[in-house]
Image 1 (cartoon, one colour):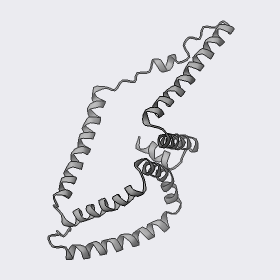
Image 2 (cartoon, rainbow, N blue to C red):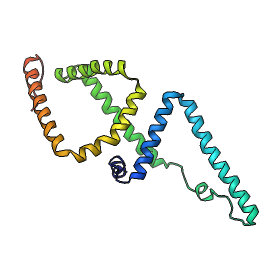
Image 3 (cartoon, helix red, strand yellow):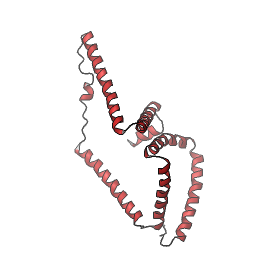
Image 4 (cartoon, helix red, strand yellow):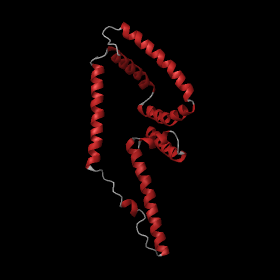
Length: 191
């Protein structure tokens, strides 16, 4: 699955990437105008309208041509869509792993196990207050989706230049963090 997501974000198949990108963006823009309940109801009505119309069309076509092709969605009705107990256990275990590691990390940050990491977290939260004042969550989600579909392509095209500048930024950042670690009392040195 990981390879297909990467292919999707790198636009290996233009039609498929465009369809997913457009659908997700349309859904998010719909959510900016309507409530979640309304969007879900409209999507369900659109799908039902299409399937009912197709079913009626096929029934009329069979009556006129006097054929007996059967239900037009028979193949889809016979597909098994239930999750097995093993799949559910696997997903629950992965979710539990993520929740536990997140709780441990938050405990470490909030209880100041490492002074510098806690200060970096505090600065991040402080910056997020400004981001939250400028954008609502849905706008940020739209920006994330657009970035997910555009940044990999731009990076692939300009990888050499971007890596060069990222190396400079990383060097400066590490230099500043080293100076902060030296000056902050109680900051442990990472080796």
